[in-house]
Image (cartoon, rainbow, N blue to C red; front, top):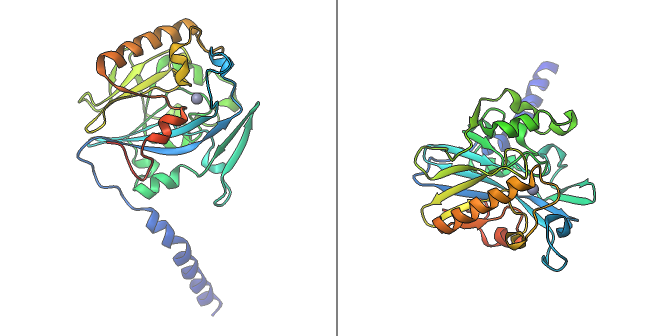
Length: 285
Ligand SMILES: [Zn+2]
């Protein structure tokens, strides 16, 4: 009797817990053309534009948005940047907040449930890549340790030379299947529509992503090559670059690319860019 009751209770709990789980296991249908989903992965308050080579008054709103991007191609998927707050920091449905020096970082919702709602689980994502390894871009990196990691050697070396506590967010990538990228363009899916470009300076192996979207046209997702649009005309680079001369050279190269390709510039932390783009579950194509 006792056993039957236990079995019964087990079945009830299975039904209660597995119901939503089964719903979350929706699988995304394959796509026939390139698209990019943007997720709201948070907001950073407390930044000082003067630290980015700017003058007082150059920037009206110093807050930085933190998008995460899922690139979906007919041949596979690429997760680009993974947020500022790890999913493990969320309690219930409440937004999460953390302090980083003088900054206050918040995120409205965890990342993985947003992917699941579209039918993607981390283990189904083909590639993981970050513009760079700073903490506001890699918070959920470990979740993608089963994907193939696309990274420059200089970046990977810097990541695993960092203090152990700073490696916590991405330590599982050490054993991931990894493709070390050349210091030239890297064509992710082999058809020229998703290209990773080497733009060192902000970090030793900083990289940006050039997309050829079927309706939007060419787009450059620029990582932290610039944080604020006003930096494009500033004469000084930001203070805390790994190598300021490299940053300036990478900026010159990408300004030339923008001019030659006619690509839209998506500065990742720029609230205005984020505001005008479609956010998941809608997508940009
Ligand atoms: Zn950043």
